[in-house]
Every structure is written in C-alpha cells, then in structure tokens.
Image 1 (cartoon, rainbow, N blue to C red):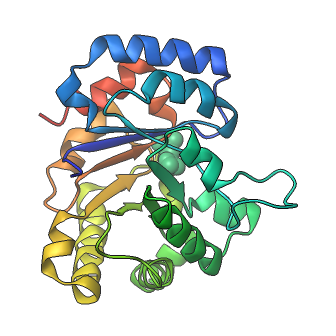
Image 2 (spheres, rainbow, N blue to C red):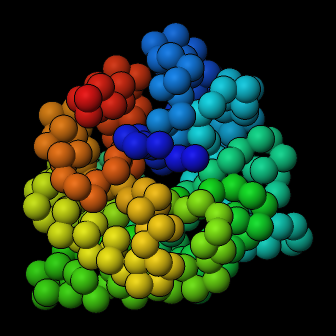
Length: 250
Ligand code: 13P
C-alpha cells in the first residue's frame, strides 16, 4: 500500500545514465529500507535501464515519465509501457503539463495511458493543473474537474492510482502555490474522487502537490490536510536537496 508522505522525483530531460547511477548510489546510501516506500523516481526513458539495475530490488517506486497508448508497432520515437514494465517498473507518470502543452497530449490520450498502465499492473501518477490564464479567469476548479474526470474515465478504482496537482504557473517558476491555495484544490480533488469512487478509495488515494517544491516550502505545504506529498522537478536532481524535502515533513 502507498504510504504518506510520498515524495516523487520527475527528472524531466536531465541526467545521463552515468549521472543517474551516481545519484542512486548516493541516494541509496542515505536512506533506510523502511523509507524507500516513500519515494518514486521518473528518470528520462534512456536512463530506465540503469534505474532498473539500481532500484529493481529495492522498495522504491519508479517508472517512465511518459508511455505511448500502444504497446508495440510502427510508432517511431515512442516508448512502450510493456517494455517499461519488463524492466521492473511499477509506476508511470501520465498527463504531465509539459506533455500536454508542448506535445499536444489530450485528455483522451491521458485516459488511454492510465488504463494501459493499470492493465500492466503499474500505478499511474496522473498530473492535472490549471494554467495562469485559467487561474486568473477563475477557471481553476472547472479545469481541474474536467481533467480529473476525463483522465479517470476508464480507471480501475480497485487498483491504486495517484493524483498530482501541479498548477502550470508554479512549475519551474519558483512561484509556489501558497499552502491555502494548494489545499483548496486538493480538497476539491478529494471531494470529486469521493463522488466518483466513494469514501474508502478516496481516503487511501494519495494527492501530491507539484510546482517549485523546495526544502524551504515543503513543510508548510505538507501541514495541509489533503496534501499527501510532492512531485518534485528541479529540486529532485540533487540528492541532498531531495532528501531535505522528505526530512522536512517529519
Ligand atoms: P519543479 O519542481 O521544477 O517546479 O517541477 C515540478 C514538476 O513539473 C514535477 O513534475
């Protein structure tokens, strides 16, 4: 079962296999076996083999930042979820705002990917969040609701899944949402999940916050009732900064 606090690293397009290996060697020397279940890593696809070597036998969750909707075929440049699974991965990121805005991923694709990840017995970490324009025009809750409902259209709610709320305006900008701003959206997501799947499932579903999370702001955010952990970009690239985020939560 997934545990709180849950702290996930999205390395985006950073680190080569050598750098990934060095990171994991250092990271693994600094955490206990019990703490491993609190972490997930999403390295670039090219680093998944070394990630498998380093993490496969640990309790750490890991997987791809993105997979394709089909498992094999003539899809040049895409990554098969089946191949990711064959390396031993147990979790995949899906619907990240950079995938949506830079690569045109739509809600329909997100829903198909969620479904495929679950079929392969991996846990989807589903990213949703509003842009600055959407927030400024008062559409935050509408956007989040539509993304959530569409992403979960074919979800198997008997299997685990994670929601990551990442306001687009907070990603990589240094402009973190205030704890109150984040909490009101997290509470909204929790209530929507409850309406869709009932209370029991909702209570054990992790809702993570992402967007400029740093060692300095993590503790205040985590004090909020509905923030179960974080999806971290920039600050996950250095072992010590990433661990400081985790340690700030106790
Ligand atoms: P930053 O932590 O760099 O803002 O990135 C957040 C993110 O997009 C994680 O998926």
